[in-house]
Each structure stands twice: as structure tokens, then as C-alpha cells.
Image (tube, rainbow, N blue to C red; front, side, top):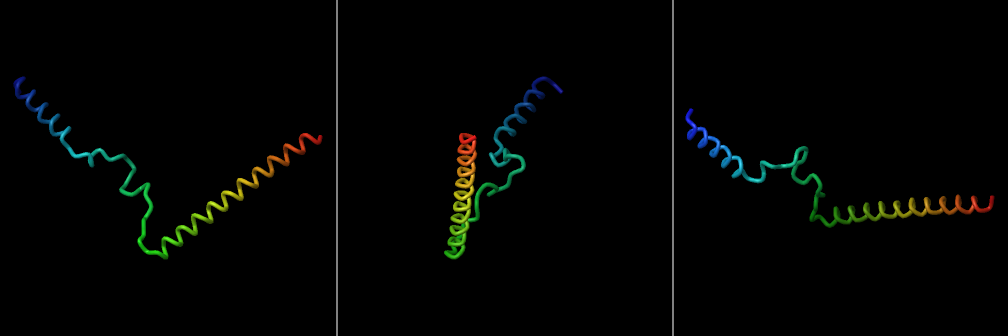
Length: 81
């Protein structure tokens, strides 16, 4: 193979590789919608999702308050000793 043929081949491969669509550059171990939730238009499903979220938030608040209470108890017990 002559030098010019080799150069043409390399250029052809480089142009082809750079002109591929961005879909070919997808992240590994991912699929469409991996980090997105299913968004329903059903009002009942939306209400259920909101209720579940409110419950999670309330539980989180309770755990936070419990940790705060325990921390304050430890602090008070330390100062009374």
C-alpha cells in the first residue's frame, strides 16, 4: 500500500469515527430514563406518589428530631457528671 493510499484510509476512518451521532457515545451501564421517574398523568397515581413522598419526608423529620434529642441528652448528661 502506498503512502497516499494509507493516508486516505486513515482520513476516511477518522472522518467516519468523528461523524457518528452522539447516541454512540452513550454512558456505560445506563439506559434511557435511568435517573428519571415515571410520570403518570393519572390523578390517582399522582396523589399516591405525593402521599408517599409526604410520608418519607415526615419519617425523615422524625428521625432527624430523634437524633437531635439524643444528641442534646448526651450533651446534658455530660455536663451534669
